[in-house]
Length: 167
Length: 209
Image (tube, rainbow over all chains, first blue to last red; front, side, top):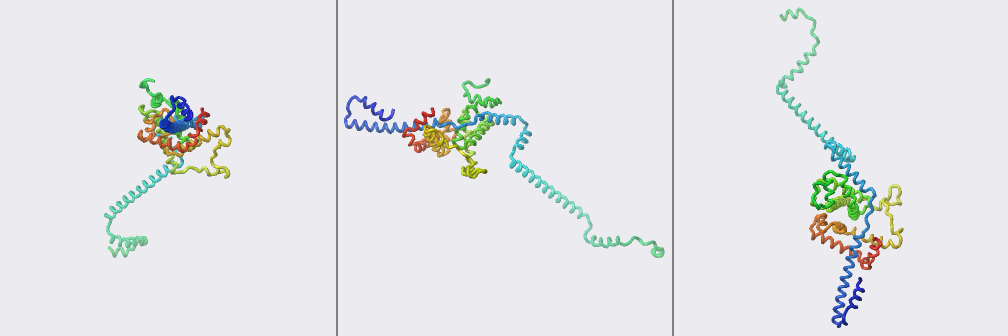
């Protein structure tokens, strides 16, 4: 029933004519009711519009697609953890695989560097230990003279006179 | 099924079966909630293809989280919470990596946009135009609302959800939720006043029925 119908309904049922004051009160009351009616209409309209928004179209195979994903997830859960890890790795995008491989390579390089450092340190310590037992540098100075002697040609054939003199 | 408390919500009962390894039981839940979920997602991220992908992901995440489902939580509340969280994640992701503009042209044909949408206004019969235009106005007005107000109003459409349950999905208090709904509706009424006052909605609704 709209506001005009409402007015007509109540006017037809009033038992007597209204005084001017009563008429004014009546009009005020009707005006307030009209506002209330208008607000009520708006609210009702709003509710109906929202309720009757059309459903978004959905693929006919939506449920089966979801169940396929769910089945796959269910099967993955049933696998042992190690296999799950490799299955996940293989499913990684190329970007992720590259990132994972880069991390591994970096770890490898750093480990090798550490190994080299440690090996050099050990070598240095070994040299230090050996140098502590070796004779001093002054002996090494005569070493070149000793080495020079080695360049002397092979012993000459025996000289009996020299041998006799030495004896 | 043995071990089920009497008077248990049917959806919760199905979810308990899923928790116990009954995968086919999940299909009933998907069938029942796929439309409400995609309605919510599409009106949050207005891209039909992405909405469907995200909706599938919602159900997949719900399945994966079955171990954490508590019977005390209503299934629909729990599901819509997952849907909203995934929508928010997608909105954040898009704000970091803006999607292709609708103005981007097709790689093979510079005269054509990358994505094309049919303009039903040009081909629809005259009687349907008013309905289509009004629906479009309502959709536009909804899309212009802040996310929390829009989500609150859209969840109100789901008759199964009480205000308390909507508050749970939104992660805020009951009074805050009512305030969101009220403010959202006031904004919508302002934008749709010409249609509400003239009663155009009556024609649109009559055609829907």
